[in-house]
Amino acid sequence: MTNNSRRTVANAANPMTPNLDGHIIRWRDNNKHTGEHFNWEIFLVAKETHGTESSYSSPDGLFADPDGRLFIQTDGGQKDGLNNQLLVADTLTGELSRLLTGVTKDEVTGITMTPDRRTMFVNLQHPGNGDPSVTNFPARPDGVTVPRDSTLVITRKDGGIIGS
Image (cartoon, rainbow, N blue to C red; front, top):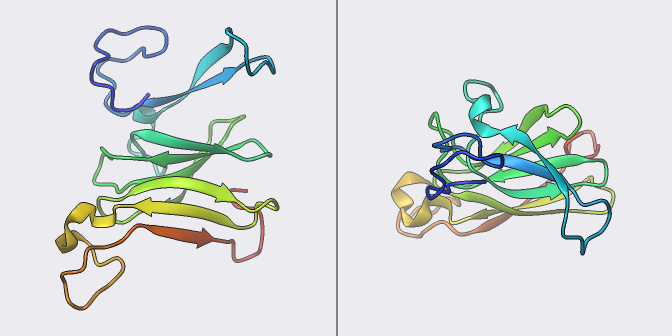
């Protein structure tokens, strides 16, 4: 639930109004992908992270790995002067860790991994958001070229599994 200004009345799925930071709902479908009923709960509330090292807002993209880690990509409206970012959550404890922070005015979006989970590919969309005066990514000496969307290839120095 992100950036939904039309939700002005609190309810079970959105218990906070206004909810300027968003939250993540976790659901279980009893292994019936065609089922019409499921159980759900609020997993992470962005507002509750403010002032911590894992502060974020506007969760927009999610990626779950086979080990149960949830990778969270943000888009827009970051509080406390933060840029958009990629975090990883332990789905048992809710503990968050920040993996990367994007450049000014970008969106961290699109994520996949190699089957061994030792290499991750993450996209940065519209870095600088059309305003080359706020970023030099990728650096161009002419000061005119607008930064381009990019795909980052991420590995760990120790060769381990990303997010572990």
